[in-house]
Image (tube, helix red, strand yellow):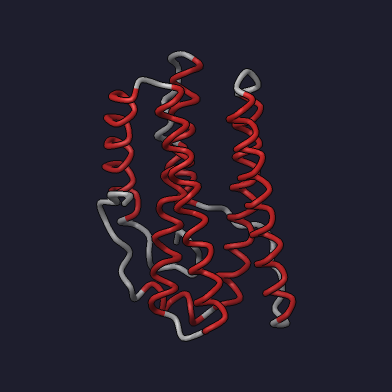
Length: 193
């Protein structure tokens, strides 16, 4: 569906399962950052009320995911740690086109968001298929579906706001770039690590 060029090695789930507390904290902060990103996009698009409405729903859903992960952390007696730097996302930020016009920037930010949602969905699928924790297996399956919907929404917005052919070409560039970036990850106890 996403055409990711480099799938996550299923052994990453073993690394994640060895430190569920760390994965959950990192995941919670990823959800908070996703909500913040959706709100940031809203500030760029006041003239598109339908898109703003959808982005508000995504921001609320991401905050609900943050709450759900936080509740799991508390229920299990884990410590909710400080926010983490996400090197993967920071490397993706570098690929957002600078300069140019406002519309091109907005389209690229939509593709950036779609890329993160696509990889997160793929990682949740790996967790769902490879961890032993039944509660988390179900939880991540549900989130996988949500992330797939967000990916579809962001790609759709990019195509609505830009020339569809150019957007498709730029998405291919994003996929190529992300494949190079993700090669350095998949060995850490973080959602994108």
